[in-house]
Length: 384
Image 1 (cartoon, rainbow, N blue to C red):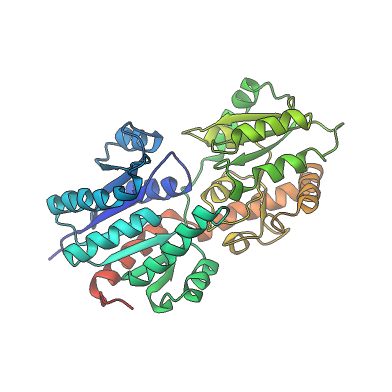
Image 2: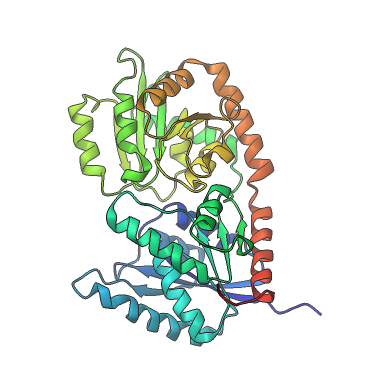
C-alpha cells in the first residue's frame, strides 16, 4: 500500500525575488505527490510581491504573515508565532521546513508548540553590518535546536559545526537549476540586445543579484572603470537593493553612464542571460549562488569570487574563473581575459554546461530533499 504523503509547512521570509525564492520555486514546482507543501510567507508589505505573483500564476496556494517594521517591531515576532500556529493548526502538518533567521526563530517556537520535527535550509550568513551580524549569530544559536539542517555548501556546514551545531544533523545539499534550452536562448539574444541598443560586436558583462554590499556590485563597477576604454563593452546590472542609488552615482562619477545599464528587478531573467557574453559575481559572502548556476546553465562563462560554496562549483580556468574576494585588480584581469579569449570562453561554457547537467540536476536534488524529509521524521527529535 502506498504511504500517505508527507505534509510540510514551508516557512520563509520573501521580500522580492532572489536566490532563496528561486530555490523555493524550484521545490514547489518539482516536488511530486509524495510530499504536500504548505507555504507560509513572511512579508513586510500587505501587497503581493513578485514571488507571490509567480506562485499565484502557477496556482500555488500560500499563506502570508506580515512583518511589522514600525516602532512595535520588537513585539512583532510574538504575533508572527501565534499567526503561524493558527495556520499550522488548520493544516496538521508533519514537518516544518524553514528558510532564513526569522523563519527559523518562529518555526522553532511553532514546532515546540506542536511537538513537530523541524528542519532548516541554511543559505548563508550575512555580516556586513552590525544588525545583520547579530541576526546571523542568533540564527546560528537557534539552529542548534533543530532536528536536521540542510546547508547549501560544505563550507557552510563547517561554519555551523564551528559554532556548536552537531555535524550529524547537517546534510550538504547544494542548490539545483532547471535545464535551459540554448536554442531558445539564441533566439531571444538578438531581440534583447537590440532592445538595449547593443551592437553586434559589443561584449556584454552581466551581474544578477541583490544590489547590496555582500554581493560586491560596487567592486564590479570600480573594476569596469579600469577596462580598456577603447574596447567595445557593456555592463548590465539585473536586480535591485539598497546600494542602487549609490551605484548609479558611482556610474556617473566614473564616467561609465554610456556603458552601464541598471535594469532593476526582472521576474524572468532568461532573455537577459541570453544577451550576455559573460557573467560576473564578485560576492564577499555566498552559499551556492543560484544566479551563478543559472548563468552557467545558459552557457555563460562565469567569473566569481572564491567565497562560500563557489569554489565547489567553479574549478578555475576549467569551467569558470575564480578571483579572491575584494580583489579589484584580479577581477579586472579576469574580465579582460574572458573578453579577449574566445577559445577560453568556449571551453568554460562547455565545461560549465556539463557540470550543471551532471551535478546540479533538479530531479536528483528534489529526490535528496524528499529523502531528507523522511530522515527528519523518522530520526530523533531531541535537541542539543
